[in-house]
Image (cartoon, rainbow, N blue to C red; front, side, top):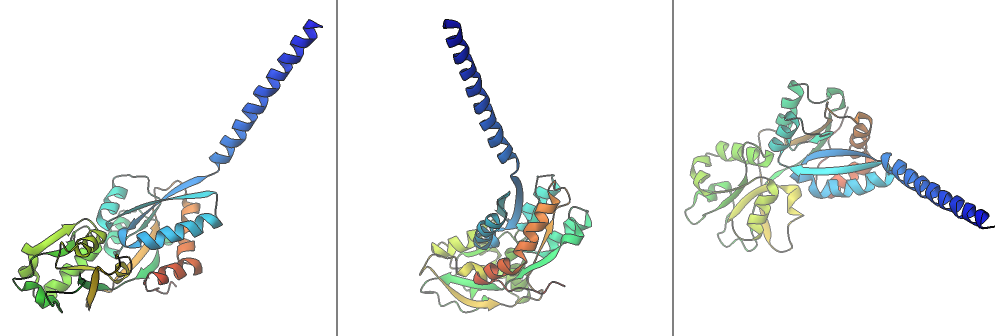
Length: 266
């Protein structure tokens, strides 16, 4: 009788262990089916891609998107350095072209993602009555927010426009420089800069009643944003799914809500 009782307890213990291990295995198996892909995108996409991420993961629950926002130049150099990036979406065609020339993206995957406009902003109230780029050389204008002119797309476009207007030399010693366009937006929001350059899509993300948009800045080169799969990816199929989604109807709808213009892919 005692032996039978011990046997029963042993069997019960074994069954408990088996069930526990089985549960863990099922859990581990489920987790192993989640594929993580990293999207390196210029900061201008922060709000739109955050919304797209939610919709994409709802449609593809087996894929976990990791968003990596920054300036286009820094993101490009991360890829050149071998960082585990799957998709690249810079706010500049130049950085994509550099990667393409080195074979670091799949050319067949590259698509036109969106377009934008460059604008000049000032703190709410515009107490210095700034109305044009020429006004920026006035002595009472002390600080101008402009993101890195080498690494950041908006900085490069702004420098080009200021140079074409003949005022670049007059504003260089006034620049309040940040890594991304989001830095420039914050400087103007806080009143730390008298004016700044951002994309029109950034205006809607400013804190309420902190800035005014003065003018759309003319650019000689259209502002166009590409997207492509990075050739070092281990998840090309999932990466392509994201590109198809963001350039598809749902993705385009979200991009348009944030003020991006949508190009024709063909």
